[in-house]
Image 1 (cartoon, rainbow, N blue to C red):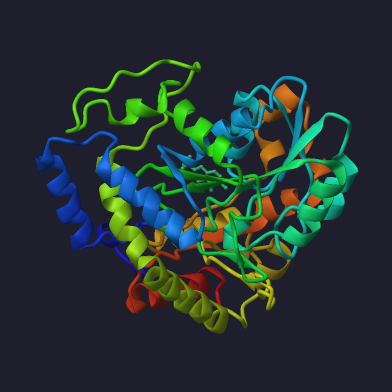
Image 2: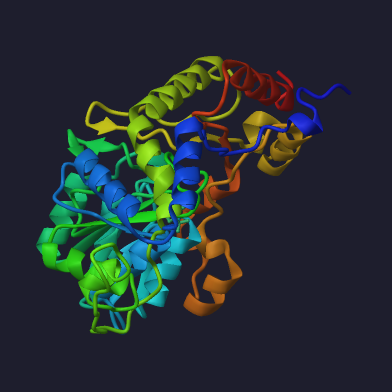
Length: 388
Ligand SMILES: *Cc1c(COP(=O)(O)O)cnc(C)c1O
């Protein structure tokens, strides 16, 4: 059988688009003698705050670190509960556990795949301290309902915006609803720094504390202790972490963020092509966005169900891989993982919407790096896998 793409032409899922500007900047950074945290990180924070229309932002080395520090600075820890979604990356849950708190899952809405506000309300106890919504695939959560619940029960909101840098809800930028919000620049995300994250906080005081916690708990001046202004003494004022971003990473980020709209438009174009070219097939395509939402187009997730497609999800994945197309799975629902079953006593069947989606979902390539021919190959491979 002839493969659509050969092994040496394998389409890597989530490969980022890296252009000459980023490469030149990384080289300049390497040659500058300053690869650690410095001016380029500060420039990236400023560019990011401008993009979000906020006063300030703190760059860290991952979204996981951003989530962990947000929870700590929110004083969430032992004895506290945080309500989040079962359809997310494990880092969302692990960050809550690292903070010493108890994650509590509220099932998703099966159309939007985002946490269902009605399910959140059912899970609130007198120990609940925060809601941690994830804007899944880049689609904003129902922030009116979530904000209303948070206000009514006096809860904090910590947004996991790892998929959703460009998303907006009712013309308000995602990441400006919560008390804290966390972003990722991991290699497969909408814009990348290799590894990297960013935190926004409503309160300036909270954001200052995050900055201190991100670098060993050293007083603010420590960030510039080796700068050209002479050595600065620092004081350790908290037991902090090693979560700072390096200039080497920010060198990529300061150019990526300039191209954020260009890349978004490219992914939107691919998204619309998939919508048009796959619509007759016996699979489910992403639910349409409403006029209230600006989708960040991070993941194009289809549902492959045996009863319609004639093959199950994992058989579909094998067909795609054989044809040289890398796909992703976002995600097997959190309670399906053995660690959480053991640690939390969770049963996957208690979260049926997340369970069903987790067992039938496949993410097709949606990177700004894809050419029109790449997208055509994906479409041909999907059709071949489904025998249509
Ligand atoms: C990628 C991701 C994270 C973790 O981001 P890192 O920057 O890799 O730590 C957290 N939450 C979600 C939903 C993600 O997709």
